[in-house]
Length: 427
Image 1: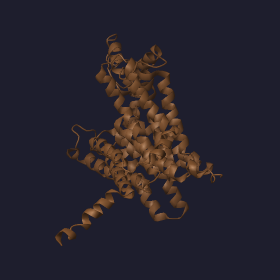
Image 2 (image 1 turned 180 degrees about the horizontal axis):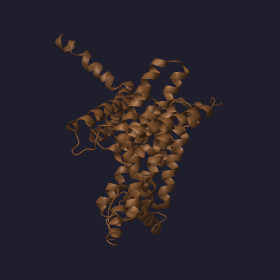
Image 3 (image 1 turned 45 degrees about the vertical axis):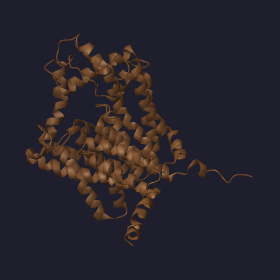
Image 4 (image 1 turned 90 degrees about the vertical axis):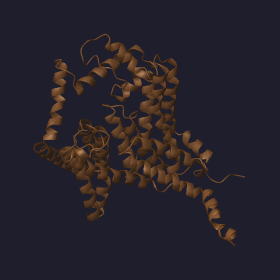
């Protein structure tokens, strides 16, 4: 009797093990945890990314995965990774540096897996909700750290930074703040004022943090662009004019009451003048120097570049030719995505990078919350990549992979599959 009494539990476990729906739910849970952990941890994101891919393997529909791999939205990121891998063959850098340069592009291989899974899953919005909720919690921690720096987990952190850095935090908060514009507008049109007020309060919390606590130059440049994209796509010209006037008024008001914002904006001109007059090393001055040198490196090998991992070696050679501080700085990243690719893989790499951005932008045409989120993620990545290498940076790269992968898969689910568009076979 005891043996018989213990029999149903293993049978149930075995049944769940063989149930495709149970595995899809597991992938959903891991993806949700991955999105929620992104603002807080790098190691946990790496672990969950691997676990997510592994849990996709049981009951994998190879035929459908192959169809997705053949789509341009998958081919372009795969091509960029393969170019980084093949680019190790003509690089003059040490092999350790060559292979290290391939790593940042490897996360792009997760995109086809996300397309495949979220074409089947109905929990894609849960992933975005988890990321939003995690960022809301981060707003609270950032505010607490601003008043009590001892709470910060990161040693010698900037004001209001609980973990990571102000660039990553600015990317999260600006993305969430602008993404909320669409559901707020839809709720107001439906006269659902209570949830619209809640989301508006959350949006204001993000913006207030970026105005009064942690001001990012990249966010200051990109938020107006993202809002302009929203207005052009979703609003009429009268509404756009009203929003533009309101945004200008709010911007002037924020400027008048936020010393942090005033100081950050002032650095644009002051740091540039210091660089021009050779009055020391500044952040903007270093970037301009990185870009100037990178353009020269690109001109030396315009077709296929200098190879994977070659950037630091090239900067070392250039630094030996100059004695001033700004020109003598050695980096492995020119802080511009296009130049980062161009130096290593030339015009071929730039074409593949821009093709990837283009096909992902085209994927998110149309109205709806999901296309809006996907479009916003791509547009933000393109414009912030003017000042950083955000496809290859860990945090921003994963924001791109999760946003594009989940939203892209959800849109694939809403479209008819090739075999569904064909009529019955003629016999």
